[in-house]
Image (tube, rainbow over the protein chains, first blue to last red):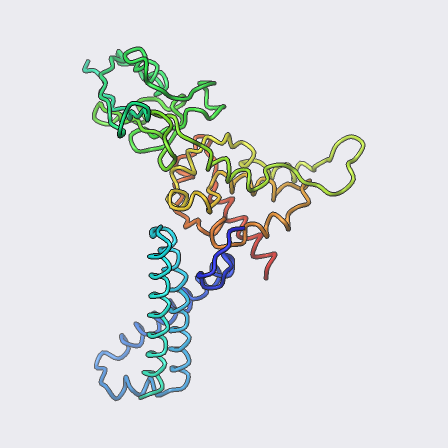
Amino acid sequence: MVTNITSFSRSGLSDWIIQRASALVMAVYTVFLVVYLLLHPQLDYATWSGLFQQTWMRIFSLLAFVSLAAHAWIGLWTVTTDYIKPTAIRVSAQFAIIFAIFVFLVWGIQVLWGA
Amino acid sequence: MSKLQVSLYRYNPETDSAPYMQEFEVDTQGRDIMVLNLLEMLKEQDATVAYRRSCREGVCGSDGMNMNGRNGLACITPLSHVVKNNKVVLRPLPGLPVIRDLVVDMALFYKQYERIQPYLQNDTPAPAIERLQSPEERDKLDGLYECILCACCSTSCPSFWWNPDKFVGPAGLLQSYRFLADSRDTATRERLSDLEDPFSVFRCRGIMNCVAVCPKGLNPTRAIGKIREMLLANAT
């Protein structure tokens, strides 16, 4: 058993399944957006804004954002533990990444519900 | 017939400040010999060349090395499989400390092997004669028990290069699954709980270099997948 404290869930198994579930959510969200854009070739601001006024679309988007946040944390944590060996630089990079993810997540929520 | 160009990694920490490549020309007389035979010819030219070897038939796992960028056993790798443009580059297994020339320090590799407790554990009273297995139970060990611990797989794995102290590596995990899959072993739960962290098993990114280089044709990636399935079944 190798202990660590900066990975997303502290458990490799849990991180692994979250990585796969979040990938699935993001794939569905991406396919949905691409299909939506293809079905609306003359897309204007009112239609686009109307889509995001829907509660279900906001929840769907929030799910995608949360998935992206978890996915990015797990993925980038793995990259830092692979390639950054000096502990001070690695921990600093991990803190910076986690902080950026938090900012983007809060910002995303504000965009979704602020309009 | 032009002579074969051989580039050999040389390093003797007692006399060299840094490793270097030594160039050889070898007349193989057009024969498709094994890389180990080639090394023996190099040793005739320069007796200080150092490498490990023993059985010369792919059983002992001593002469794992990197031949033209690909790990394998020198004794069962014919020149025709590795030589490109009449040239072959021989290096030690990547990622492990070099003791001398092609001889590497396998301590980390064995440490990871030791960590997975590579022996049967059974807490039930020993039977009078032996613990029996059905043919089906025995079949589950095929493709697992054949590993000779030559380290070709683990030293071709980038995840093992970056975290050899934390990631068990393909060789160790193949052996770990060999005991997880054994019907006579009762320590399954303890074994799984030792592997559940983000490094031991889950640092495997499915690169599959291990499968590509295994001289015995084994599939560590599949074994790692089976361990993941067992962990998942145990924890959900």
